[in-house]
Length: 394
Image 1 (tube, one colour):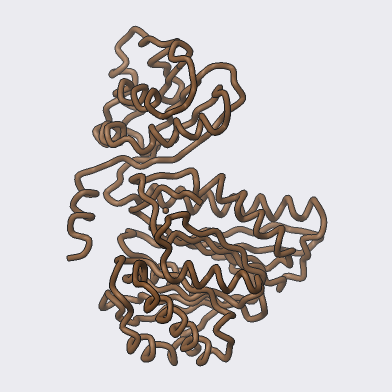
Image 2 (tube, rainbow, N blue to C red; image 1 turned 180 degrees about the horizontal axis):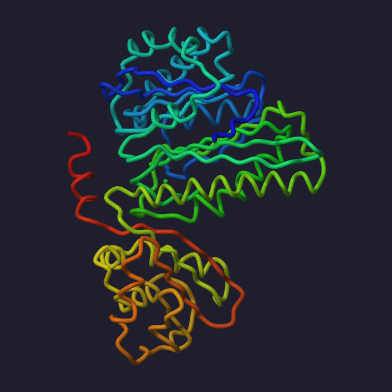
């Protein structure tokens, strides 16, 4: 059963920005002021909602929620796109009885086209009547683009004898390789938190979740993860024990959601869990997991259930990581196929056949006795991915 944090309401409406016959506008609203944290794309082309969201948070981390549209990214739309974004917030806030700086904007979809602001004017009066405290799944569906299923996760812990609840949702299936995927994520929490700590905590959790996945190596103009904490539970994160418990729950929610993105990769059929250990540094290990996870040759072999270790060691070798090739050991699950710079003898194809048939495939690379480690989850690359993205705008 969904465990919805205290004091939050959700709405999902059909605005007709690009899609017809489905909801494409979501509202996440705290009934009381909430502390907001956010991490945004590092892409040089930053969408209008990213620019405006940063401006709002630079003024104050106390907001009431987020409004998210699907279908149009409002990216690369110039000064006009930024004004459209600001006007959309003014319209929404007017009918919700809020200030426009109380809402953080997000958009996802096609890059380039501007909003039809008449559609915003038509849908804004419907926002407040649509609010419900039991509709996060509808909101998660409304922000989908090429996603096959809504992505939502929740959990509850006890702090000081009281429950603290957290619920997260995200969208994303393609254009995924976060460097902070197209991805948007939102987490609601009912604990009372310090704004600076909440921002630092979200960034740490993203580094261990959303920043550890890849579908196609692309980062978007709109990538955003936001987290809200409104204190409605009566629990204050003012001790190390409480902070650690809340951070652990946030990390769990983020990791559940990020795994769903790779699981739902456009055309994807498998998830590769790549781990590099023994590297000279964490940075070297990360270079290697990204090179392997983003390699089209590795990903197509995964789709074909082919344990082609040569493609993996080749990707490792061109990753830019510093290591001794004679020390590299590679295994699929617990089966070592390449050790100390040379292949292991035996009928590896037969041994690995049952492993490669699974949806989740473990790839472990050891480089030596260094302390550097990194992990990543990557999808396979399929014919359907090409079809989806060749026809995306049609």
